[in-house]
Amino acid sequence: MNIFIIGFMFSGKSTIGKKLAQSMNMEFIDTDKYFENKYNITINDFFKKYGEELFRDFEHKILLEVIKKDNCVISTGGGLPCFNNNIEIINQNGLSVYINMALSSIIHRQALSKKKRPLLDNLSQEDMQERMATLLKKREIIYQKADIIIKGENIDIKELQEKILSNTSKFK
Image (cartoon, rainbow, N blue to C red; front, side, top):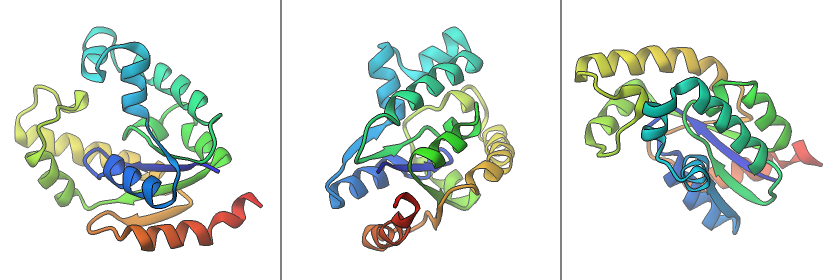
């Protein structure tokens, strides 16, 4: 069984995914890192060179590769579940966990982050916040299709692990 960690940018999917994988003795895969290693280009550079539409197609192919693996915790890019029926593919091939964070928490984390996000590139702080609010509102509909929804602020990994284990009946 695979566990997919989904949620908006800056929600801590990779950090939580790594901790969860370690606590459950599973392999960890970050689809963004997987993409960058496979295609030998950063996501930011790919966006600049080829655009979002082609990125989403390649990201979909990455998903189709990683679902063939087993016993993995897979942290997805923030937009991955929202395109190409990916949330349905995720839910058919594993257990999905949505890290649900308040917009104010996301904005706070973005302000502290050194990592650039292609969808927020070259925007003023005000425009960036507006863009995040619009994107989150649009994506929330998809994220809500997750098997498990947890509040993203102050996640207890043991508690999350218990929720996951109580949901494994989905695969029996």
